[in-house]
Image (cartoon, rainbow, N blue to C red; front, side, top):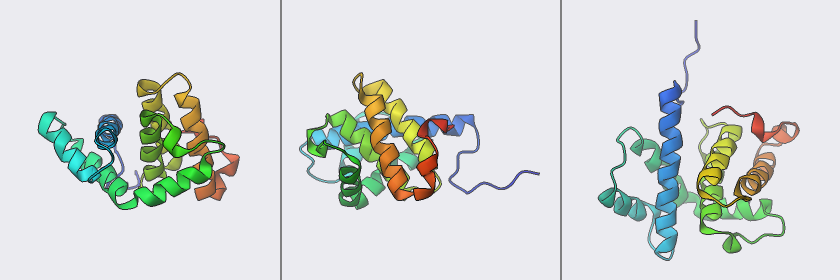
Length: 164
């Protein structure tokens, strides 16, 4: 007999893939928001993306959820990222690295059904796909530090152990 999963927990491979692709849409929304001068809300940027691009209806609920977290918690997310950044300023990072870090941090800090290690692994995948050569290692290091500060019980576990 299997244990029931939380309602928002992906139940199968297809749902995990949809959630991974939803994160890529959130990255596009964030990039649009930043390229427009970080004015307005992430929700407005999402509306602009949806008006010009076709986002799968299966992915939209998770896109909306992460976008809402970014809208509501960007100040807190940025503060936690600044604590985890050693010798780096958030404002000086590439737009892609900054977006990937914010998405990963949003999930680690505010999306309870996504395990922190999974959020880190998914952020690394975004960095591999869209960032520079050093982006995956950088993202891993920063989000792992944030995760360890957020969840001290994780200090003895590595972030690469995660399964998406």
